[in-house]
Amino acid sequence: MAYAFLRLSGYQVPQPCKSRLLTDLHLASPKAHVRCWSRSTPSARAPYSGLTGFKAVQRSLKGQRSRRLATVVSAKQEDDYDFDLFVIGGGTGGVRTARMSSQFGARVGLCELPLGWVSSDDRGGLGGTCILRGCVPKKLMHYAGSFTEELEDAESFGWQVQEKPQLDWKVMMERKTQELLRLSGVYQKNLESAGVKLIEGRGRITGQHSVEVAGKTFKVKKILVAVGGRPTKAPIEGAEHAIVSDHILNLPDKPAKVVMIGGGYIACEQASIFNSLGSEVHFLIRGPTVLNPMFDEECRIHAGEQYKAAGVKLQLDVTPTKIEKQSNGKLTVTVEPKEGADYTIADADVVLLATGRQPNTKHLGLEEAGVELDDKGGIKVDEFSRSVSADNVYAVGDVTNRVPLTPVARMEGSLLAKHLFGGQKDARCDHSNVASVVFSSPAVAVVGLSEQAAVEKLGNVHVFSSKFTPMKAALRQDKPQALVKVIVDSGSDEVVGFHMVAPDAAEIIQGFATSLKLGITKTQLDDVVGLHPTSAEEFVTLSSPARKYKDGKQVSAG
Image: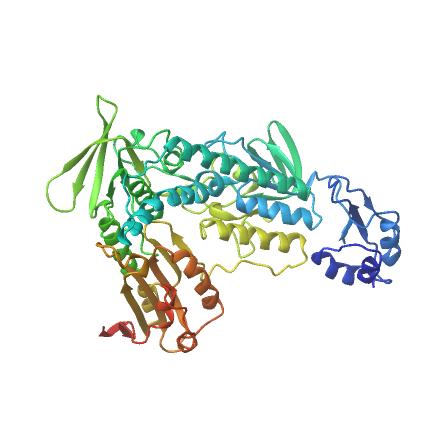
């Protein structure tokens, strides 16, 4: 009834309010407390209280314009709190939680450090790692480097490139910076439009219900920690001469020679980027393949082969032991191989230590709130992103050491807002079958289980795979190879993994991730008619298993 009244009165009622109005505002309801505010003046939130049921709605809406929103708060407003939710951290997860919570009617504050391109104890910025020093700048530089491959493709089709184009590094970096500032500004505008109180400064928890920012203490009902993570340096002698991923995205000049240390996705991406941009790249990895075992082994091996074919000087099973600064300012790296004598790589302009990241949980006062951390410094949370040891403290994103990906942080934030303030008490994030991608050249994209993980978990598995030269590269002399792979639970016929190593792998795997989430079977996949000629159609034309496993043991090979 109440919802119908609002609609007849010309109000646009948010979806979360609909169910709450239907259940909370009826003639026999207890006292309801209604808050109304204008979209254009989100801070004007004077509550109307003391009336019951339908009359409360009539009184609260009297004289209001059709652009106003109504949100019901079924419990009395606790005026001794400054905020219902206070968010420490203005990255993807924190901003999403803050915006949605405010739109649901909560009083929300958010603090973030002043903007800086390199994260530190006193520099951060709205947008966090993804916008300022991760996903977005990395992808822009990836695109910049990809044009060299486009030129190679063009030449293979007969285009005459009379003179090799030259990259104006300063122009690229300046325009990249402008775009990052624009996106950070969008984050700020969206927060302000949602009615979130934005406070610049470092947040510190000073008690179970108090947070201090820039010398001022706020009383808060719930606290969300969404401060992300930071790059770490491996304990190598001379590590102070090396840089981390924050720095390499902001170099003032293009380095002629780069040494990449570390085998994870950041190192793979940066090795490909700088190789494409024309730098001499030495890529040092302690293990036998690129990437970590989370990625499929066949894909890791194939990606490493393609990196080498593209010109990256990939060196596997080696341990960098020392970084020294030369008299001319350049750097020398001493390398200890698994077999043979030590050797050095001299005259490097830059040495990147891409040897991991850790949650940014130091100096936040988490101990004052009784927040328990894991052995890597991440906040231990339950399925609802709530601290396992402090009921009023929550955490989303990389700071929890769950799935350190931007879209996951965004999803966790959305569901937390729904859980806390949207009336969806059972809202929680499903971390299974999350797609991921390494934006190297070629890209490595995956969703679901690797071959090794599927065999270990299921025992009975069929593996379908194919290597081929994409048509766009068919006329090139070097014939770069793509790889597609489908992992099937042979007992149920359900597809449990899609993998691809190819230039457009990310765009293609995104679609197959949907089908995996919906439980597609191999039979259903085979019934799909492919788009021809495309690389994506390879997934629906794989007819014979390359390998079969029974009870965890390989029984046939292609």
